Length: 312
Image (cartoon, rainbow, N blue to C red):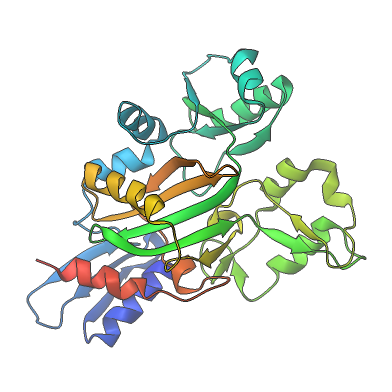
């Protein structure tokens, strides 16, 4: 199996610097970089090296732990409840917030996530689906608005993007399901972050759209295909590094500083009234969405990463 786009970008940048690159285990995304000074080398898996602490990875990978650590602090979080194994949720939380999101607590890339839940029946189904990935389940108020990914390298902002959920454009003839198949056949998309865009997740689209998948959108009509803006589910990125509100950056910077994370992706949604909500963090962030944004300027995040890696 070939390396995904992030390690490929890092290895290419290293070679340009005159560093040596050893592809030690492509199947598991391991490789070694040797500095041109001949004295230093780093063993890396995807983007994770010894400079990323095990503790920070645990905090980022455990959504429930991250939430519980942030809750006593002054970070804006969505209203949230955590369900232990076999616990069920009464209707009070759903009634109070109208629409909720259900997530397993130990997954990434949108796995096991259900969005736009508005009924108890759908909530029970979503909880059961999330529990197929994790016994502990997180339920949050569904925040709609601009979904930001902030990339911090060496404890400072390297790039920022707004992520949009995967979508298709109607041609007046094909169903949404067929349009997704056509889009996924594009050379720009592939499974598992192998290309500049990831394939639209058809299972996620089925859960999000249901019977609407068989409808035929009008010519030029844009249809959102999945509920989350996750790049791993086919979403796209719009670079906003030069225009992002400094107050949003300050929230991300506060998280990175508090947890001592030199490399971190911070996900923040700004709702329709301009209120920020921290959604999650990622200590193994993808660089592809910043190097190949759907719109906007490409950011040289691989070299920012190598600068940080080589920093004493």
